[in-house]
Image (cartoon, rainbow, N blue to C red; front, side, top):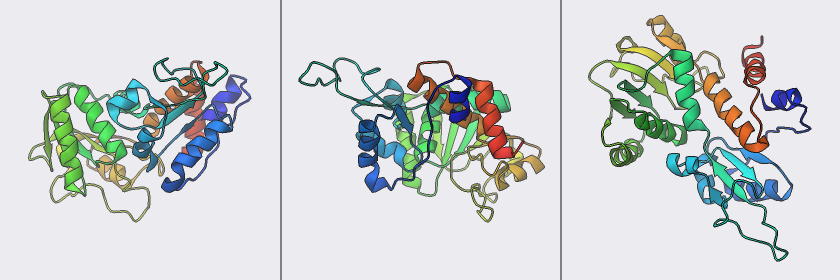
Length: 274
């Protein structure tokens, strides 16, 4: 989507993918900076680690506690954060942003027509993406948030954080005893064909929700989405979230409005093959 957007705006830029071991992340960020990259995106497991590896954090990264976008250069850095070379010029800086949180909410509204204020939500997964989603959903004034994670202590940490930040939101760890308006999958279960469902159907049935959103976008229909569709739920995959977080990153790097239609078309061609 980024290369299609660059081409549409006549920018001589390229977006490339690199696989980086977490132990080499700091060196990779520094390398990209000194090689003159405009910026980078980070995916799991780098989003939390990068919080400590950038020169400055944008408010979005501070608020949601994860970095998925980095911009290099002096722009966007407050004078208080800027170090200066001997010649009086600002040093090259790395600034961490989070474009995931807003993208989640935009995608839920666009793709599932979910009104989050007052909604009851079951969130599966408490890793980097799950944590950001939980904090963002709480800030949107959902009525109740149920957190389910393989490691319960992680979910409990997020629940405690939400109680501090959004005390009006009722948050609990574990499956709800009643129906919910939305199930949101923020786990990686579903990426592989033989993955188990991220939901324990013995504890909670898909008949007890109206809508299911899976952050996974490849495959286009995970086992969770196929099962939810068969149960009569409205469903959507993570393409909308991917699009909107990418569009925001594009604007951070280039300072220009993202060509959303071009980016969406490129994603659909790549993921759906049409």
